[in-house]
Each structure stands twice: as structure tokens, then as C-alpha cells.
Image 1 (cartoon, helix red, strand yellow):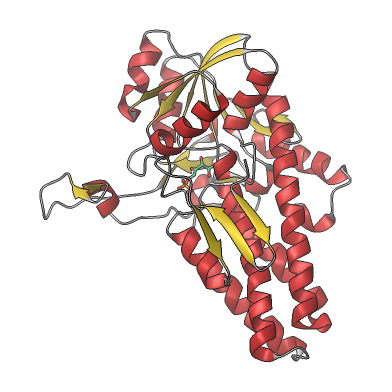
Image 2 (cartoon, rainbow, N blue to C red):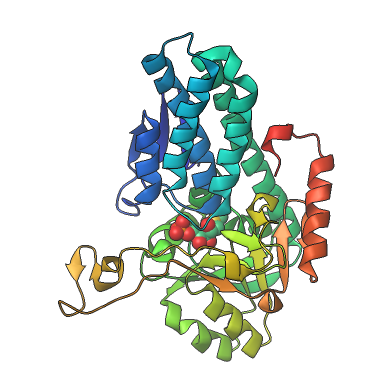
Length: 361
Ligand code: MRU
């Protein structure tokens, strides 16, 4: 299953807001439609929104070809595409993959703008395809590295959705679970429902069910109960942005899980591609945290669940300090503390691979 696919003149996405009730596809034919799909979380998950934005840029270049004409002045074309990138950038602030992908796209625009809008659109499409392929490959590599960390029979707890839906395909933390099962390990998964957007209950439970992997859905507040009873062996989560010291921004509730792991002496593993590491940030304190509409807290399925007028807050992510992270599984291997060193080594290993230069962090 792929969360997104480019077809002729459109980006086709699985509309994740409609799951698990129906598998509906959304066709985006303009960059603005892609931006709207990201902002409304029809496509979500750090790697998926990065690749979706890259295809959004390719669509933006096609639109520019129509507006500016085939022989547009390279400077005007580049300016138009910087505006498109800005529109996509404003959708969600925390996942660095979005900004990483848009930077790569703008580099291509800078190099290729003399080719005219059609040529730039072609180059951007090629780059987005490379990113999509590199994402699936990285996920499979993380799966192999991470699966080795899991005992032959194990109970894993996971949070949010890090599967094929959150990526282009296969998944990060869920990819590790898949790879372990494919290697013959017996894995049972506790799935946090992930209040308030319910990515765990709606999406992870759906994916695990399709994969035939045994699971138990729990509310977020039950994690400590099951850990205290010895029913959880380890926690596996994804990441939206990792600062160079190893602090991890991920779905709200991840920090609580990491604290619980420390209290119960359980490993807390983060699974993320090197493109999720933001080496410009010294620590997690600098990671922008998305504040979403508090109505996502006061309402469930459009139904109010709190008294009218109640004030609510909705930080969509939290930061887990590096000292609570046991290891970060990347496509280049398993990084252990001190993370500043091991993450740089992972990027160096990654860069020696024969991957297209543009698709690298
Ligand atoms: O708000 P979301 O659903 O986009 O948040 C997703 C997460 O927090 C995931 O854990 C993260 O993006 C890693 S997904 C491979």
C-alpha cells in the first residue's frame, strides 16, 4: 500500500481523515490543493508530507507554465515557485521533512529555471519520484536495523501512526514491527489511541489489522498500567524532528511514554530517517510545536464532549529529551548516545550510498 502516488496530472492521496470507515482517494491537481490536504491532515506523518509537498511543487510548476507561458523569464518562474513553496511551508510547522523537501525542490528550481516551466516541472517530478523511492527504501532499511533490537517474542507499545500511511510506504516504527514479523518474530502491539486526533485507533489499528499483526488498542492513559504489570517490553515511536543533540519531537504523548519507560526500565526506541534530523537545531527547545484547533480536543467526531465555553489546548507534538531515548534507528543503522556524534555518522554513511544527490539530506 502507498499513501500517495503521482498519476499523469495529479497527486492521488489516501484521504486519512476518512479511515477506517472508508478507503477514499483524494486527487490534488494544484499546489494549493496539496497544501490544503497537508493542513487538514488528509495526508499526514512527517515523511509523507515531505514527499507530498515535493509533488505539490511539481504541480505548482505546471500551473506556472499555464500562467506564465512556455518561455517564462527564469527569474519570474523562480519567484512564482518560491511563492508556491511558501504556501506549502505554512501548512504544518513541526515536521522538518516538509522544509527539507521544499529546500531540495528550490535548489532544483535554481538549477533548472532556464529550462522553462515545463522543464522545471519535469525536474521537480523526477526529484519527488526519487524522494518517494528513497523513502520506501529507507523504511525497509530501518525495518532491518530495528527488527534486530526486538526479542523473538515481544510486546511492543507504539504511539500515533508511523506506518505506510505516514510515509510513502512500509513505515518507520511500524516498519520495524513489520520487518520483525517478516523475520519470524512473534510481536504483539499495544496501540495507543493517540488523543485527540486518534491516529492510533483510526490508522495504526487499521494498518495492523490489514497486516494480520496481533494488537490491543488502549487509551493513552493505560500505558503505565500495562507497563507496571510487565506486559510491555519496549516502546517504538517515530519522529517529526530530531535536534542534533538527539531531542525528539513527536506526537503529543510521546514524552509521557518516554518518562514511563524510564520509570519501568524499558527501552524507548525512536525510528526515523536521517532526513528527520535537523542539524541546525542545538536542542529540542528550538523545535516549533504546532498548536492545533482546540476544537479537536473539545469535540469528537463533530460532537461536543466538553461543556460549551471550556478552554482547551492542543499542542500537537511534544519534545522527548535525548536522555530518555535509548536509541534512534535510522536507515544507516542504530544510533546510540551521544547522539550528536552517532547521528552525524549515520548521515555520513548515508551519503556514501549510491543515491541521487538531491534525495539526500
Ligand atoms: O500529526 P501527525 O499525524 O502528522 O503526526 C505524526 C507523528 O507524530 C508521527 O509519529 C511522525 O510523523 C513519524 S511518522 C513516520
